[in-house]
Image (cartoon, rainbow, N blue to C red; front, side):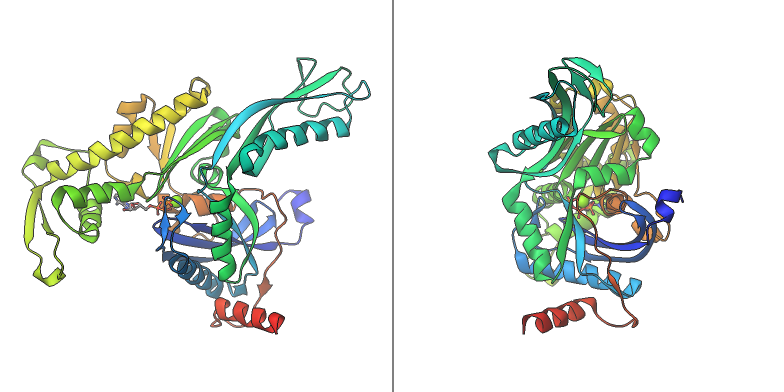
Length: 418
Ligand SMILES: Nc1ncnc2c1ncn2[C@@H]1O[C@H](COP(=O)(O)OP(=O)(O)OP(=O)(O)O)[C@@H](O)[C@H]1O
Ligand SMILES: [Mg+2]
């Protein structure tokens, strides 16, 4: 621990990732914001009512939040008042742009820098976008590159390249509203593409340049890191659920059965043997007991999956091209998210993107149980390592082990309101 961290009292932070398939909550002890020392509680619950990261049914999502947070609270023996929340909705995007501002008293002052950042902020927030992060990448005085902290340099115009992460505000407010319904405040909004990139890669890889693709259930997040920073990010509203829907439609079976055979028999790594290998499944029926059994080959199942994954990768490729940054990314492509568990997906990606591809799980934070150190939890694990924009308030440590956090919060709220 560095001396600067040693001065901080450990704080406790709640991290909440509301995904289309599952809601995950981690409670971490931090020596400083964004510097986790250990995970003290984990909770996960299936999510109902989220489509491509957007709340479409409040009750279902609220239930998932209560259940995941409650489970983590019991394990950690704390009651959270608030959480940092991941944001994958509202067409969240990271993009770079240039901003400039006149230098008022010949040499660059703090006010000049702050005016430049305000100009950048106004530009990023145009069209009513919500600003989730704004960072200065470099600076120039009269077009000549100078240090990123340009204070004291003489000239007329200060300019800089900035990276802004923004999202449409209404879906983010809806997400925060659901969290409020579970009696939790939101201390920070953490862009999911930033969190998942940090959760699935090492700092050296981000320094060298890396493209991270998180294929979840309803969304695919694309993040590009160069020189250790997130410079471009985009969200595609397609994920593993779409593969499942294609299987259900193609084989005329239920979504539940399609999900089962996708996970048990689905593959992109085909062999000649798969043309004969049979996959049995129940056909669609109003009464599940009355469903007839059918068979298909693993090859035919793989055809359906490959069609959807190739289409998704074509979208990913288009987003990478649009960023204009691909030539600067030296390192491999990293796949993460639950759908990256599809066998053979790295080879399919290699064939399309022409760069080395790795599948990566969430970083093993101290105290993180093995079942959370998988690709599906890269976002929530990465959130622990993101320095949030707002300060985190510490949670109250409870003496009892069996108390339900939700009821305690509700009780406190009722007490406050009466
Ligand atoms: N072994 C597997 N093979 C194929 N797909 C899998 C496997 N295991 C999980 N998946 C898929 O991963 C998806 C869930 O991934 P994940 O948990 O990352 O999603 P999420 O974070 O809840 O959703 P999102 O980030 O899209 O909002 C589901 O579509 C599921 O079918
Ligand atoms: Mg996710």
